[in-house]
Length: 412
Image 1: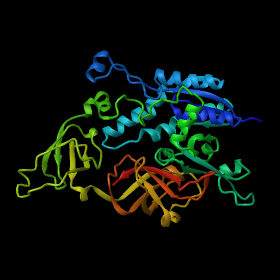
Image 2: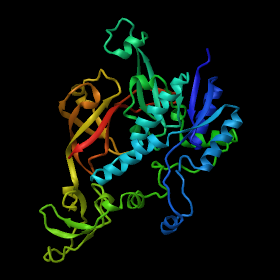
Image 3: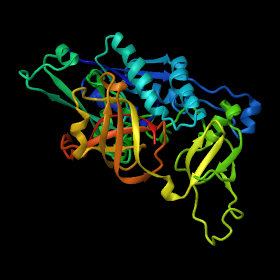
Image 4: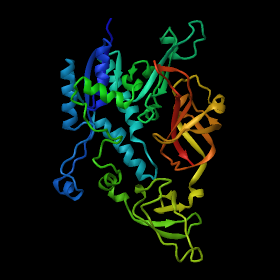
């Protein structure tokens, strides 16, 4: 029986090419465009922020029409569904609340968890689709276990072939999005396809042009889609102005040495954007090294800064941890464990020193110790765990790394 696939078509080149690849592979494909929350701005506010109009980057009229044209060219059904309310609650409100609390959120992680592979996957499965496909740059490897092996979890009981799904880095490391997908489970991966993960962005562009797709010349999509600027600060100033209050900049010893313009406008490791006057404090020093943000005191509305060494950390705690394979024992990973603390950030050697478990996965708490000091580790960021891999993802490429899982940094 022909498998049915729902493709999330954003109007970008990646999801457009994903749809074509699936049609060419013989799947019964249907396109879906997600209408998400949009910021409402008056003409007066638009003008004051130098804008003429505004819609979400991922679901504006141009994106919708590009997706619709691609579906029409392929001869596949196409639908628009409204997820504005849940997107506002799970992604936008979370983003604002985290910054207001002094943390550094990652809205793309939450969008994948609650929207694309949460409500949307549940929605299309309820309609009878076998798979959800997106234009993410990542790969999924399906491993068939020995049927005689011991049954260890509910998912294996429900799937007698004992398949284990591995989430791998994409072929194109410069576009890899596996960092944002650490919250996926075995049950979800069994019904997800990432068709462009085996290709580079250049190859995807060439295929789009070859097939004369309306999305072929579409610009690169921005990671955060719900504000028009490439900077999150104007959005915070519009949405939570009561939290953008200027205050004191202090050094690690508590001395007031300058002024900041609102705590939510800063993240740990940041080097610019605040005023420092240290002449009177360090008059005997000829050349003062640059200051970095090393902490925030939300109650006192103070920004804590220090020199480079003070901005570097080696230990931190991670909570709400999800392991993609629920049978993983974290303590056994230490010799080969790697962690990434920001999208496209370097993979850092680390070990788990302490693991506390209330129940499986999301209630676990891990203490992570890096091999070397690293700058810019901030509460609220995602810490995603990897290990080296030798799994073949295409005829010409072996995946270098596999995603094991991840969680949220809570303490540094």
